[in-house]
Image 1 (cartoon, rainbow, N blue to C red):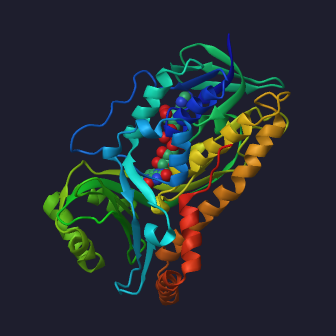
Image 2 (cartoon, protein in one colour; image 1 turned 120 degrees about the vertical axis):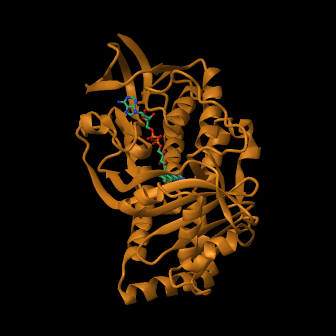
Image 3 (cartoon, rainbow, N blue to C red; image 1 turned 180 degrees about the horizontal axis):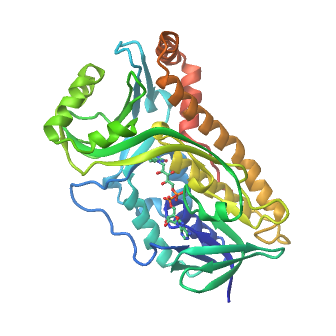
Length: 406
Ligand SMILES: Cc1cc2nc3c(=O)[nH]c(=O)nc-3n(C[C@H](O)[C@H](O)[C@H](O)COP(=O)(O)OP(=O)(O)OC[C@H]3O[C@@H](n4cnc5c(N)ncnc54)[C@H](O)[C@@H]3O)c2cc1C
């Protein structure tokens, strides 16, 4: 049986960033996921990838700490200088405007492709001699007083002091260990697609809350291009996926008094639309069983939220940042799976996670409610918040996310 300090299970951005960071701390690290055989190809050309994310400054700080931020092809990253969020009455005053200039920060976020970041993480991982990657699936995990044993699908076994579960929303490790999670379906899917736009997007991320609970976000990409995230009922999402170019334009004309087309000009489809089911998940614990934790949950394995704030991955990468801080500063007599360290990690992640899950959930529900009072309240609320410099500054601080490396 192989032995190592840490095993990271999962090959999404969270798992890859965590494995690289742990190896950089000098811990012998093995990363296991089914899709680690080949490195992700660098995105090229004028067709942008299908998975587009808003990356917050906290993510930028982590990627800089991992020494990969400067290696990313910045011509494929779009800084966001303004965010404009509109209520569902179509009235001019029902809008919230967040501005990087007013907040005294160069940008509020960056928009870019998932494979751009994955490719750069893959390149950096190749040169990290403390990191080994294995293309396989973890089938079983056993925890004892000294560590964990993982059994892999291809027959091998690995013994590790600490296991990091970065194995996504359905986390097999979380389930294997019997860590319960509260889960709620939003009965919605997010339809994503990239569009060429006739007018410049002005480096602005737009979001429209529509009557009935739909939310349409148009995020700026380099050049005259935007990435759409349209959260809608599962049935409507299935219909949207079947539309041709002309039918899409009809859809855009018929919603929000046509403001999307007025803002961005004629839109031309530049990718194949795809839909993702939306739900909220929060694991009861972010570390393994009480008696002998030995496991840490990060990313979607620990929490999943509605994409209306574009924060799911950013939150997962803040898990990584905190874990690297806790393990990097550990006292020399503590092993990486020392219960004190794992509890430190869990304590530090609870507040950020609960606050973000709560806010996105409440916003989603407030804007889905159909009573007149709630309608007036939310639109009035947007306008009111827009007038308060203090609240806006706090909102921006939360969107930027706070992490520090020592
Ligand atoms: C429409 C939409 C838009 C979004 N937009 C944003 C955004 O703008 N900004 C943002 O921050 N977030 C956004 N998110 C959230 C973001 O997509 C997720 O939070 C993020 O992808 C989760 O990454 P992860 O690495 O934790 O999990 P995943 O990417 O799901 O990775 C899980 C990994 O675990 C592996 N795995 C699973 N089981 C096993 C096993 N048994 N053994 C080994 N490996 C295993 C899988 O193969 C995979 O590699 C959005 C989400 C949606 C749905």
